[in-house]
Amino acid sequence: MGGLFSKDDELTQEDLEELQEMSNFNQKQIRRLYKRFKRLDKDGSGSITLDEFYSIPELVMNPLNIRVIGLFDPECEDVEKVSVNFKQFLKTLSVFSPNGSKEDKLKYAFKVYDIAGDDLIDEHELFSLLKLMVGESIKTHEILYIVEKVIEEVDTTMDGCISFKEFCNALKDVDLEEKMSINI
Image 1 (tube, rainbow, N blue to C red):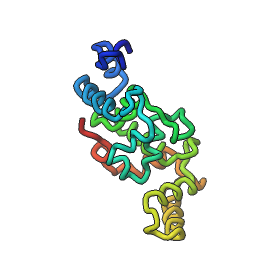
Image 2: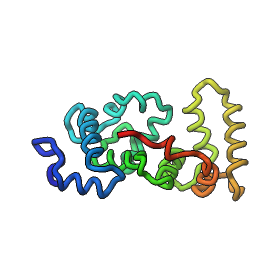
Image 3: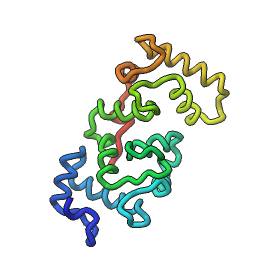
Image 4: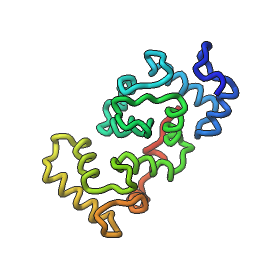
């Protein structure tokens, strides 16, 4: 991308066309997201770090924020060292565009739960994430019971894990287009 992070700090028409091609956003939305990105990039480095992500109130309030932030930079093995450039930022947020497909939204949601990245959600992963979501408000044995019941209900292959197909089937009646869309 020619003008991205150039000294005039504006996106060129070439940049906008390339970014539009790789995302579900139009050029006006991309410009707005770029301005937001620049505001988040407090040190002007051209990337957003974990601390800078934590300046987003909605993200801080999300109990799964570490998982969500980690998915912006999936190559980074230590979320504490995450460094997300604008392309990564835009590509990830593209899933949340009202124009994003239901399948992409499902894939993203599945990745949040698939901590090991092995295309399966096992009881340990489900327990860990449920524990993050409920904190101390529910006792461990109650969370274990919930995990057992979810696996029992969703796991049609009876292998003790939830596959992407099973995950999709469990969420088939959920309006992901509304629940996983942002207004730009």
